[in-house]
Structures are given as structure tokens and as C-alpha cells.
Image (cartoon, rainbow, N blue to C red; front, side, top):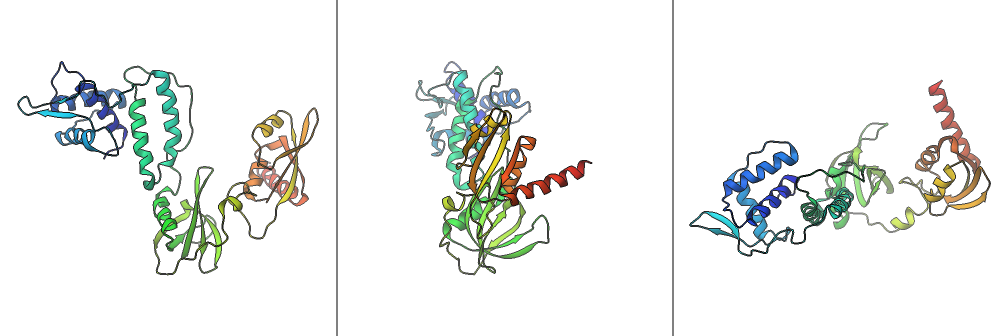
Amino acid sequence: MATNKHAIIRYRVIDKCLRQVDKTWNWKSLAEACAAELKRATNTKTTLSERTIKGDLQNMRNDKALGYFAPIEYDRKEKTYYYSRRDYSITEAPLNRSDSQELKNAISLLRQFTGFRHLQGIDNIIQKLELLAYESRSKSKRFVHLAQPVSIPGQKWLDQLYDAIKKEKPLMMTYKPFDREAFSGVISPYLLKEFDNRWYLYANFHSKNQLRTYGLERITRLNKSLQDYIPSEDFEPDTYFKDIVGVTLAQGQKTKKITFEVYGYTVQYIQTKPIHFSQKLISEEKRKSLFEVELIPNYELESLLLSYGENLKVIKPKNLANKLKARISKMNAMYN
């Protein structure tokens, strides 16, 4: 079943045509109506075949995923298609313009989850929603702009890894880090995690018998392995990620109390968007405030703290403050 925008538009046009009982519709006239709307909506000229239109009619009648079960009948004498129920429509409860725009915004958010073929049910739901949200002739003013990427790097491996995790199957992986040569080894995959528009895999690397983190965009090959799967005995995601920002956790590290000063209007920003759920306000003055978080320092935390520039200063622990100071010095040297 086609689930792209063209198919959605065709279904909508066919539905609109078959509800016009004062006209007769064969596959050619339906194709012409669909092509005209596709040209208007996408600014592309399209020629639709008999097979395409009849396939659309069949999908509208019988496709369980679509769920329309449209009462489309064929008059052999007139060689035309029609609805056997005059009150039928695939939309049934048309949306007003305001509802349509709100629905489009929700659809944009849902779209980020469709990288998994295993979640095809979501894609079918989205298709139905898009059909309802599709607007006819006039353009509407946009009130919301969503900036999620069309696809996330490494997304092509999602299905294979998802299946291996679900079925507890090991894989032979070839991996190319950004800073060194590629290597291969057998892994037992445990968890897929999305962070900052990238996918990460948590898996046991058999030759080291260690839990490691891999960026999916750096995986170059995955194959089945004949080795035994190593079950995860003590990897509990909620516990693992509780004390970190991002995805990196060095083995054996313990949480630290990190205090930092925030200046100016950034105070309100930090208060409304905490760095971590453990964040506390320690003291507050007119032009600066002191905050504390309790977590395990890592590269992602360093980058987050540095992102506030001159409006945030780490006070304790000193080794973290010195790390940030060294990175700032290197940045400063690059610009001098």
C-alpha cells in the first residue's frame, strides 16, 4: 500500500469525485481529476495509469490498514464507479481550517518515529491524519514551525537492531569511529536511544565483555552471528541514564555535586529549562544565582554548560571547572 503524500491526495480526490452523484466517473476521469489536483498541490505534472487508479480504488475498498472500507461499486453497463451509500465519505467528519493546522503540527511530531518499519502502524495512522488535514484550495498562514530532521543519521540500521534486541540475537558489527580505523566484532545489542537527533546503540562487545555505546551513523555493516547472545543482567536503562546528561557514561564513575553561577536573564532560562531533574536553586541575588545539580560529569554535560557562554560559570568541582577552562582556552586560541 502506498503511504506517500501522492496516494493521500489521490484518495481524497477520488472520494470527492464519487460523492458528486450528478457526474459519472470511470478510471480515466478519476485519473484526470487526481492529476489536476497533484499538479496544483505539488507543482508537478503526473500521468496516472489505469493500474494506479484501480489499485487506489481497491485499497479504499479493502485495505485493513487504511480502514476506509469504502462502498465503491462498479456499473458494468456504464463502466463507471460510484458509492453505494450516498452519505459515505472517507473523511466522514471534515475538519475546519483551525483543526487542520493543529493536526498538521501533531503529524510533524509523529513523523520522527516512523524510521522503524516495525512501527508501521503509526505510519498508517499518520496517513489517515494527513488525509484529514489535507486542505483544498487556499494557502493558510503558518503559526508553528517544527525543525526536526527528515531522517536521522544511521536510521537504516534501526529495524535490524530492533529485531536483534527483541529476539536476543547477536550480530557481527563493523564500526568506523570518527578518530580511528574501522574494527569488527560480535555484539549483543540491548537498547536503542535517540539523543540530539542521533541514534545510539548500547551493546555488549563480546571480545571485551563490556557494555559500550555506538553511534548508528558510524556502523558500516551488520550481519548475523553464530555466537551465543549474552543477556544483560544489570543494564537497566532508567537507572543507567538517571545520573547523566546525554548518552556517555564512563564505567565506575560516581555522581558529583556540581555548583554553577548563572548571570543575567539566563537565570530565568535555567530555571524554566533545568539542566537535570536534580537541579536546585542554592542562592539568589539581583544579578546572579547559584544552582546545584548532582550527576556524573561527561562530555555532553561539558558541552551543555559551555553552550551558555559567558552567562554560566562552574564553581565546583574544581576538576570540571578546569576542564571547561582548558576547552575555553583552546577556543580562544583558535580565534586569536
